[in-house]
Image 1 (tube, helix red, strand yellow):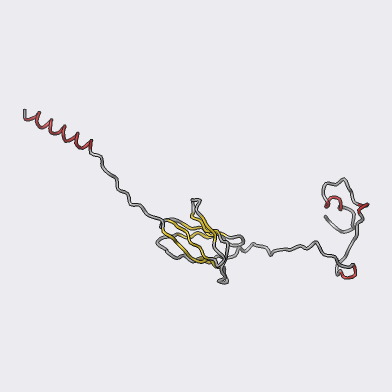
Image 2: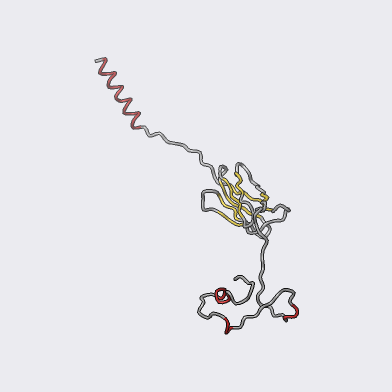
Length: 157
């Protein structure tokens, strides 16, 4: 009788333990707003810089004064990118303000502007000029460059 009593109480204890549903408590980390200013190497503000949270679709651009505000988790990484500048990644940590200085890419070329809508006299030009009449052009060529090919000595098209 003593063994049945212990067996029965052990069975009741096992039933109680298996029917008990443990609640899992997780610590949730909330996203906090991070703000700052993005500048260049001369401390000039940069408008239009893309600021995004790495591995997410969340992102914004800096305003006209180079300022931004974005919400991100403390363990997130912010990616700053702008044309002509090196892309930088900065961890958020517990930062509230994160100012970033972007550095220019070394291999960027200077901008080139071509003006093709100007009329000047032949005598005012300091370089050489050659004329090609429309009757001399190959009208069956698909592009203007191919139509001009071979029509002026020393010019490569």
